[in-house]
Image (tube, rainbow, N blue to C red; front, side, top):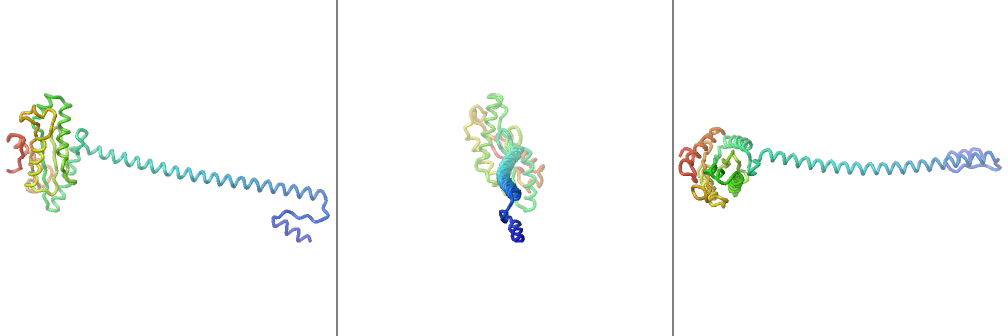
Length: 251
């Protein structure tokens, strides 16, 4: 009988007390049962609290990961915008001079490897100082934006259109030979002459115009400095040749 009682009590069941029992044994048994009940209840409460905290932590982790992802995307967007601003002319929205020189060097290296031509247009707004002096810097800035708009119109994805500085602009025409580059320049010159600039009629030719010089690699050079110098000489010839015209290097 004692072995049965011991086995039942060890099994974690309500304790078995053989008859007859005395009051001290009964009291002790009840106290033990109450203590066990309180411990079990406390364990259950702690387990429930632990599960709640784990669920809360999982929610916080998920929220934190989402916030990190959002912040990462924001930072990536800001970095992309900063990179874009670093290569953009603030007035016209075209590429700036530094980016133009970098791209020209890269494209000339590619041209030298492949043997394909590359042409550069150097463009200058005719009598721009006169326009600026007569109508003010705001009108001058608007005129430069108008020229930039024309230069951007119809450009190919791999063409590099940039503000070279002041009233000078430049275009890199990838895989374009001299004759085709002159056709592009002629079209741009005509489009600028037809553009409705606010004070264009006050200019010497009765409208605001540009002149352009064309140089092509490898015939006019294989490095940036040589090609740009050739394009600049052609532009100078256009300015001296009556303006509102295109001249090709070496011709």
